Length: 276
Ligand code: SAH
Image (cartoon, rainbow, N blue to C red; front, side):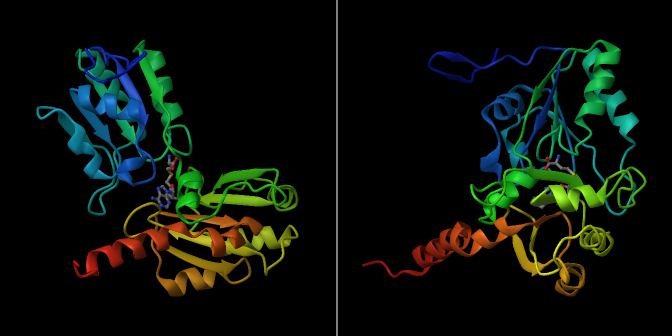
């Protein structure tokens, strides 16, 4: 039974033989949803990915088994098929399984593939959405994904397809013309090519771009540049993935909405102030 409760709402019980496929959010443990927390507290087994902040795992039961399914020490990550089979196997063994993924499981997270494997095997499951890096990361950078008067649409894209190259199936000209704000996941490796494709499609080289690394974490770093120079400046800055790249006029709002620096400054003032 779930011991998690609030008045007039029963949090679900993670039953034996079930898999809950949950998003852990972009990093800051405070961005976890209550459903994900409820799952963490009941699971016998937690299978988590590289981008999940491990502090979140301290919510697990003391005897929960915790399995890492990401890349480690330069070794290749376990194959997607193997992870899906593992989830099926654990559920069939009668475990209560929490599959924890970074951000939202259904946004560039292969959550759909894992859920389809569960369907094929007849395993019951629940999907718990998470805050995706392309929305939460922008918020922590003081950049709204949409802003009235600036953009009525926003596009999320991946800068990397299954083969590790800049996606060819995308109609870059159409994106350049049709999407005022473009939020890019996994775009650092091919940023130069991507920026070029967007400029070829008509985007102005002086358009603002923000690159947000380690979004929502204490190590968050943001580079404000322009489309024309973003690739070379990103390289010179030595900013490392994970990073979200956002293109569009919404980036300019950051000069007024950059709340996180204010918060950390307050923290620093509190910490250094002499007691009276
Ligand atoms: N399902 C995840 C995305 C996984 S793909 C989500 O919804 O957020 C991995 C990519 O997500 C990274 O290469 C990066 O582009 C982005 N990402 C995830 N966490 C991030 C973070 N804390 N800061 C910046 N980018 C992040």
